[in-house]
Structures are given as structure tokens and as C-alpha cells.
Image (tube, rainbow, N blue to C red; front, side, top):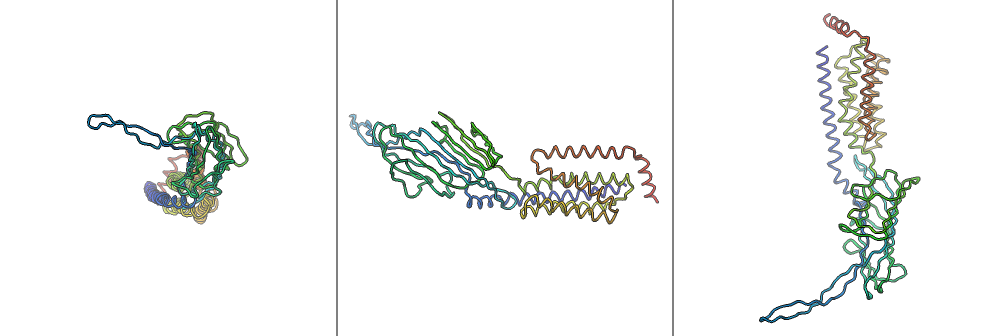
Length: 415
């Protein structure tokens, strides 16, 4: 019996090493190519977008004096300096619609989205005279595509640059003293992972600000250091969110993170890393059932059973980037169950193969592995499974006379 346990332990150790190698290979396939795959996704769909408000400014020449000394005499020299003054952004009324669409590359899903941005800004010339204002709207990303671009002053003709300059679109218009200009800006674009609206560089002040956002996804998340919406309303496909500020001074921004999809690569790595625990439970259950029912399980039986267990993780890891993750899981599970049941059915018959081995494999391989699909509940599910297993084994073997069982087996081995 001791020799058999040592042999089974050796098989268990070798299989565990194979699982660690598989987990490392899967992790490498996932993360070493992530940088290149992400750059491919960004070239097609754009990078994370950060939208800044428009900046209006006017400039004028101001005479300044400087005192100089020559031959002991003071001399005043005059020169002209161009001074730039900002126009006041008095109100912002913004509407944003985010449409999430996950895209898979390799063993990872990327959270790409389409954004429809439309805003009306109120800029005020607070100078005491008419000024030519230069108004610039920065683009949220340098490499993204922008369709249906709108950048115009309501009711006024103005001179807008035909092409963007330095990542922004610029226009010029003459504004009377105290005149309020309504700037309409908008576009349709695409991004990745996160959308942000930044009030300005560093700590910025905003007046009469309103941002309405519609999403087509329910799992909204606001990253650390961002402002949560003051109003949230659930819709059929997502949320309607609103931020309202009368006068705000803040160094944080409005941001929303796209929800992640269950990632095939990290999931396959986690399941393969946990596989030795599943096999350990399976071996303990089969050994106990074999002792109680008098079924002779040889180490070679466990060699083939361990190989059948390993086939589940191997097939799942290499199917996950070809078909949906649930389809890959089902195919891998059915394949592994078929290998175990068809093998033990020939060796020990239908009852032991289907009910003892098949049932144990369904619980400790399939269900334990499927617990990783539920984030935050994996540990609890496995703990409950382990406690239930202990209870069942204790109840099933409570009346077993272990001394007599091992003495009988020792005598049988001596013969």
C-alpha cells in the first residue's frame, strides 16, 4: 500500500509540474504579445480618449518700459510686448453617448467603444473693447478618426482653419465687448478602455457645467480620482448619467472605465494553476471509494486518469482563442469526462465509471474549474466544495473498520 501511495504521489507531482509549465506557457502567450496586439487595436480603434474644453484667447501689443544706465545716466527705453489673455468659458452643456463593443485579439478581449460627442460652450469676451478671439478645441486623441466634425459659432460666420494644427482645431472671430459666443462642437470617434473629460491642466475652475452621458452597458465603473455622477438612471441597455456643477474648482476629472469581459488567457492560466488541487481531491475520493468497496486501483490507472485531467486544461488553453470561452470549456470538459469514463468503464464497469469516477471528476474538475468564471466567488465555491467533500467521505466511511481493511489488504498482498 505504501509503495502504491508513493507511486501515485510521483504521478501527481509530475502532472503538477506539467500544469505549471502549461500555466506559464499560457501566461506567456497572453502577456508577451499583449503590447503588440494592443498597438494593433489602437491603430484600428484608437487609444483611450481624454477630451479637454475649448480654449479662447485674444492678444494685444502692450508698451512696456525698461530702465537702463549709460555713462552714469538713467535712460528709459520703450518696447512692445504681445500679451495673451484668456476668454472666459462661462458655460458647458455636453452630451456624450458611449457604445461598448468588445474585440478579441489572441487570448485577450479589448474594450473598444464608439463615442458620439456633442457640446455647446459659451465663451465671453470680458475685455472693454472688441477683440479677435482665437478659439481652439483639442482632440481627445492624436491617432483617432473623427467623423461628422462640427466646430462653429452659432449665428456668426467665422474663419476656421481648414486642417487641424498640433492636435486641435482652431477658429478666429471678432467679438464685441461683453459678447457671448455659442460654440457648437461635436464628432463621432472610437477609443479604447477609458473615456475622460478633463476640466483643464492641474486645478481648474468650471462654471455652469453639465455633462449628460448615455451608455449601452450596465457595468459602469468610475476610476480612482474621478468624479461620480450626481444623477444616475437605469435604462433598458445601460445608464443615463449626469454631472452638474454651478461653480467648481477641482483637480480631478470625469472618467468612466469600460467593463472588462472575461479574459480567456488569464482564466486558462488560473484554472491550470489550480488543477493540482482538483486532482488531489479526485485521487483522495477514488482511493477512499476503492478501499471501502474493494476496488483495486493501480498507480497506472491514476497515470491515465491524470493524463485525462491534463487533457482538459491543454485543450481549453488552445481552444480559448479560437472559439468562445464557454464553448471551449464545454468541449474540453466533455473530452476529459469521455476519456475517464470510457477508460474506467472497461476496467471496473459502468457503475464505478459513471457514478464514482465520473461524478467525482464532474465536481472536482468541471465545477471547480467553472468556479473561476465567477469573479470574487471562486474561493468561497471551492471552500464549500471541500467541506462538502469532507462531510460525504466522513459519513460514507464512518462505519468502516480501517484496521481490518488494511490488515486484509496486507494479507492479500502477502499471498
